[in-house]
Amino acid sequence: MDRLELAWLVRGVGILSLLVIAVGAAMPRPAVSAEAKKALGDLGFRGPVTGIALSRSTTVYRLVAGNGPEDQRRVPLRRNLRLDFLFMAGYLLLYAGLAAILAQRGGVWMALGVAAAALAAIAVVFDVSENLRLLALLAGGGTDGLDGVWLVSTLKWTAISASALILSTLFFGHRDFLMAVGGLLLLSGALGVLTVWRGWLAEWCFWPLLLALPGILALAFKPEWLLRHLQP
Image (cartoon, rainbow, N blue to C red; front, side, top):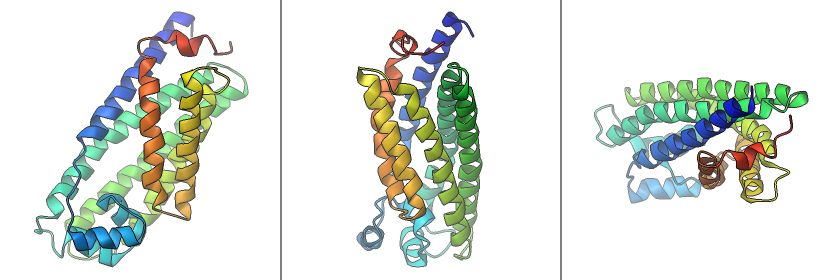
């Protein structure tokens, strides 16, 4: 890939970060009762969807989603999960684009870039499975599938966080704001991996990623900020 093509790839990645920001901002925030908030908070969660997926608590599920498929509390949850499929496409393309840039360094970096892209794709597979399982739960009246949701959700966070850890190296070695972008991706990835032991950390790993995205967006306007530091 020549320098001009690489510049367009960097610009594309910057634009993709805007898509991720826009879809994330458009995601509905399902309202929950005070009792449900307390149950979520006692387990360290704030968001109802993440709390259902990673707490494995039938009490939390009942308080957030009610007792049957016709319960109106399930309407915003379904809407959130359906819009999340678009969010998945956005972060998959974003991570794949960053991985392609990393691979341009050649040598071991090419292998790391392929690994980062593969991990992002694996994460999307588990993410799709998680959402389909949750939608199936919301369409029924039981809670038997919560353990399966927890498993695929944990695997999703592990895979996407491992990808973020690899991609953070793309931004290290800079003496400008890109170093901060790398640090934020590193922090997000580290917190995400720890969700295996503390599920509520999944919500915290989102914030460093959110703070990193404007820095990636800036590359859409000035790709040379990244290109000048890339090794041939």
